[in-house]
Length: 278
Length: 345
Image (cartoon, rainbow over all chains, first blue to last red):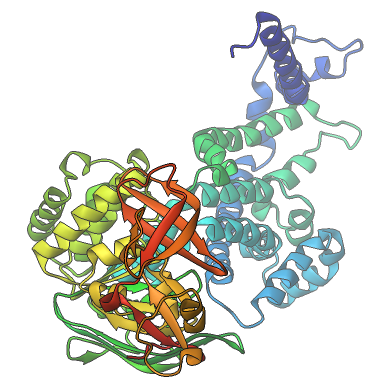
């Protein structure tokens, strides 16, 4: 049945409200980033910059090695994503399909790890990272990020793998595929949406992570974007360069948004994965 | 193509669940053998052991002249058709069919010819460039068959391949399957719980129950010379009448009982009973308590005192025929031992 025009209008309005509500903070960042510094703090605030300028976008690169931050963030986020999905896929497949002795307990223990708030891990993790000499090194972030994201990755992928009918794998075994062959040629193509989904979520987490990045990286050239933004400062400590901060936020959000849009179809497939049987 | 020998296969799940208790049989070169039995009789487990998807606790499997009990499935030179087809959803029909050949490093050209041959044999040519999701159940089933046959394996294993099809399609596919295997003259082992499939398709039937072989024989032997009451009752619809001999004598029949009547059970197929609306010499009168007409045949439930029998006659039975006169077919009686339930002659 087609919904009545009123229902459609109501739906449209509701969607509009939610979109505006969600995007308002980001929109405010965009507007702020386009204002000249003096206008940012003017009272009453202006809702549209009187003379829009993109000067702040250049300033963040002049005042700070912002390009380096972005490159660092990419290295860390991409490294984490690759490690996490790689290790996660293998582990999840093992838990889903091989009858491991004690596997049931191991998978619960892994979930338990995810229950620890990262905050309480910071001091021991710092000591550990320092001991193995990875402070100020992207791997000093990639390793703990991978560890923090693995439980989630393993659980999501394991659930997905378990939904794939076992017969398909047995057919593959009869056809002549090894376990590795089955994983690479049958299971992974079938679970690409799930792997893409978890990969993107891991990427976003690593891209945005602040606390560990602040603690483990003290050398400016090794910093990631979130820390870089937080440490943006004006000429004096009394001056907060809101325009530059906003510009930096916009600039670092855009790549993630673009990536998610590019993978959106896959994500949606991944989120509705159980609905269609293989 | 090759002979398959199964020798004393035993399998236990967990600590105590005995699934197979010493199974031995042979499938000769080019023979179509059915493993028939009720759910949970271990027939699928047995097939999976022959395929190498599971390993037996003890016993041997020979395919051709090779002992393969510990060989992984891919090196057994078998192909298998799964109950729910198990096609690769992300690959085209042609890729599904050609996968086994590709993995065995056949040249592209040969893969193509063989895939086309198999597709032609199963009417799949127009579907080769589709994915399994775009096929109907019957078409998927044929792709699964093509995938198995394209490799020209020594043995084709089929696990209830028709059970997911609707009744009409099942019957048609059953016929096609029979013609197909006659044409390629391949050794096949076919698991089913459907007696009609087993009877119509097989050269040989292995009847299983509770992890043991009940009888091995041709469909004719299984049906007409059942070795025990399980086989007698499992085949045939309605199943064979099995009555303690004393009850038969009490009702007035006088068959020649081999041995002591109290130790014997009489088995007689419903369609073998001589039954008539008119009384005749030696016939016993029964009351007709139920009349089930299916068009081509009529099943009667008839009663005389404590003795209840079912009779199956082709054609109709008069609707007002409340009395039936029955005599036993002397040459079509089966006798079983009352305690062991085994056939005795």
